[in-house]
Image (tube, rainbow, N blue to C red):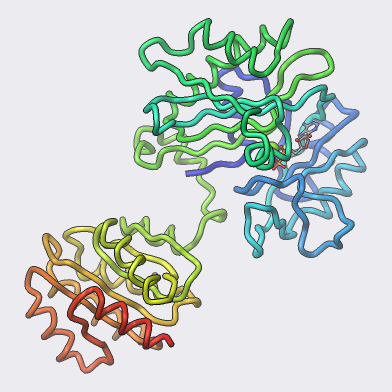
Length: 396
Ligand code: ADP
Ligand code: MG
């Protein structure tokens, strides 16, 4: 689960991290009061969307010359003018895709006098099985280019879970970021704080880009992007509250309510499967025969007829879906239950695209009988190859 920058900063502030003062607003009428509550004379108006690259982003509705999704403002009036221009418009960044994201909330923040922009993130390193700091002196808006062109400017420091963040680790991070004096003292406080926040709230990623050295030599967290481990959210009802469903794919929300794993992709064949391994195999074989999956919905083991019907509806709700492949191996999941769910869903929502069903395993004969006797235009397939070839041919 992701949260907004302003929420991430509030959270980090609670752990003692140095963040700027700021106020989140959802209407331009609130902009003036928000700005007046800040020290000034420099302000920043920041689009709150669940995507990075806002500074270099462009608003769809505004001309190419218009400023991006993070704007400096030199007066209260300037804050208000920018807030009016930005709110309600669609910001397209390198991370949003062409559709962009509507900006429904702004964060009005105290402007900082920046000396240097650094990069600091924490993540779970699968290689070492540890939480690692990934740091670079080349922070700011081009970290992707740094990673691509000069990867040697990015350093990884992993943390021993028994020892936590040691003095040696701090020295290493400070050195990697070329911090000294007051900034190094701030670093010695900040780096363990970030680690504690990461562990205590079950984050899967914490990215501060930029972490800045201000002209007065102190450190400040200027941007913050946080993702939490969805499997640990039950331990954090307060963090669950921070979820902003308007930022998420509506179909993925619907799927999570049914405890279905749904993933939207770019092709045009919708896939209903059970189990992640079968999902991968199904997508591979669709690609092998020359098409791309539009999505996959994993109904898991032991799904009910209602759950299968919900999965089917989620798959068909995607306008890119030009054909559907149901590929189920009935182990715990019974083929007749799948068949009943599919038939019920088709009867309810109709079937406007070709549907190929491949069932194998427990109660397969009963499942096939239900499909055959349904009177619906369902193409039965015998195995994975047959199923993929049939759906690819049907989509054309
Ligand atoms: P994004 O990463 O989505 O582009 P950031 O929050 O990193 O958004 O902002 C982009 C850039 O805007 C930063 O690299 C920094 O140069 C500038 N900036 C952001 N917040 C402030 C601030 N409070 N004061 C001064 N400059 C800021
Ligand atoms: Mg940033």
